[in-house]
Image (cartoon, rainbow, N blue to C red; front, top):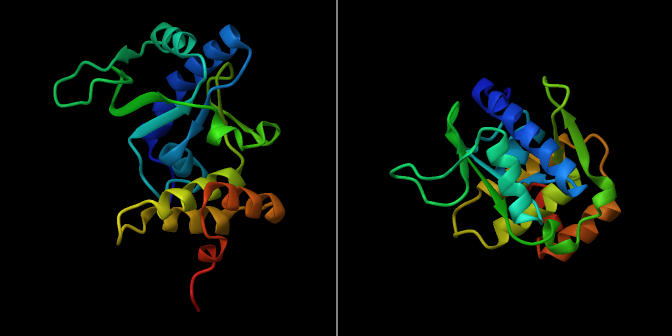
Amino acid sequence: MSVPEEFLAALEPLGRACATYREITGTDAVLVGGAATVIYTDGAFNSSDFDLVALDDPAFNQAMTANGFKKEDRPGHLLFGFYHPEHPLFGFQAVSGPLFDGRADRRRLCKMALRDKKATITLPAIEDMIADRLAQHAVASPGDSTRLEQARALFALAFECDEDYLRQRVNDEGGDFALLRPDP
């Protein structure tokens, strides 16, 4: 698998917006959820939503509009968040609250360099992503195993995983660590 080219292209203006946000606030907006899963799994999963944890909404809005994003106003779309005219397949939004309700260790954040050297994307630690996907699975509709599949893929792809931290984060999020290892 590989990350779709249109997804990678959409990361460029987002990375510039994140750099602007960092300049304004001194902190990073963090890409979470399905879009972060796409990156960590090299495109094994798809997402058209880019969710970011950014604690300063006015600064986030300013950074997005300064980098060509438009407030969502298109017919047939939920009227929140942003879109980029050059990347209309995707929606971009700030999600509320601190990163994983303040339980994530921000010292473990990962920076991803982009083609545009001025732009970077900040991702949660792989352990936080696994814990989040397990927590999302725990509250998903019965029969919806997509978040569990994502958690297992992230776990399998984690080259360096702090298992103690992972177990703590899974417990914090209300997930089940035993689910990471499929039944034999």
